[in-house]
Image (tube, rainbow, N blue to C red; front, side, top):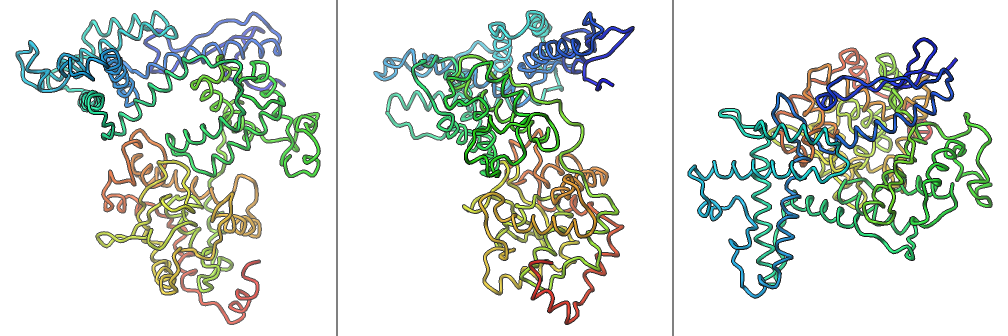
Length: 606
């Protein structure tokens, strides 16, 4: 029986292609979906045609979404990315003016007003023909520039003419004009960012005259400058004689992901492993040598790579291409692993194209498997949580050499924090403000690592954790003059401080009858998410507590957008009433002399 495929349906023995259009783009198409016949009744042929048609429509949808603009009721709504694109366009415009007039500026032959590099300054208002107030003048200037920017989109060949016409008609209908008492939210933000662009232009003009380039550049302007630089680099044709080893380019890619995206060292280490496999599949070392055929080969052969191939003794003497298995099965890499490898390779190719190392858009040749509807890890069920926190065999806190086994699962259950975030806590990462204790998840120390920038946050300590004795334990750790909360854990290169705890928890789950690759410590995080949602905790508070990416994450640093009192009230909504009785018994337990002896002798193997 044929497997069900997305976008494929059968009617009267003939296969049809059906593609649902995203709601935000339906005004462009004037329909909710596209459907037409593939003119075949052969399933295998239909699958081949389906890939081609899906790729064609995915490309079209991606091109439309590049606009990052949404029009509702003939009113233009700009996202944060749209605003930064507009600001980048303005900065690029002023940069060109400064470059063209460099020597005249250097010799003081042009004034700032003559340069026309600002648009929202008081001087611009005084020299304008506006009869309104200064605030009205700034609104007019911003709206006028937005219209100019939308008109310039026509030069983008990726945008279909029908889409541009729709935008143009919208502008003609004054869709970007603010109505009285209905000032759009994006207008103030764009106005502030364009004012920062004005300041940057003035500082750059002054730097040309004085040769003093040490001036402050706001973060939003830094991002816009990086966009402009990437665009210029991507348009530069690299000499074909130059060959760049993929590991050399990866170092730049690493810095880009670390500084711009805030990617952690552990993830970057995994990325390098993925690329090592990918380039080994085509026996190539240099980025410029990659071809579209290589990308097709990688997309096909990677499914036959054996699990843990690097750990196999044969890998020391054989090439990866000689170790590929004859068929896909239990011994080959899982679809989830393949997906991760191909996603990393596709991102790497996109970066290489932007930087001018490859001229063709090779990333479109990479076919990533259809997204699995299942999560990578499952949440713990109620019955499983009752097993984990069973007073008969849950660890004791009295043995401080292994106290982390007692506290870390509790902290994960009542915070949603990642394992390494908890394992790497230092004593001074636990603070108190307004009688509320909280944890600081940070990567400020060399041995601290976070997954991304959003993971840097403040999380109040749930009262249940305090009730279970955490503050008493923390006091005992400080009395021993230990720096780290869970000082018993040692650092490892791959899993950092989480290595020892991760291995023990896996053994613990297996010992109580909870098995399967989808049930691991990270399942606590997947357990907390629906619990917060069901407790009516707002999405923005969920993101702040658990370090998930949200719309406003770029504006949040250490969760400081929310007072600690508000976050505390929200995290207190996280409750597991069915566990209360078990937790009371766990807290009230007193280990017998035999148990104390066993903890001392066999604690590390328990």
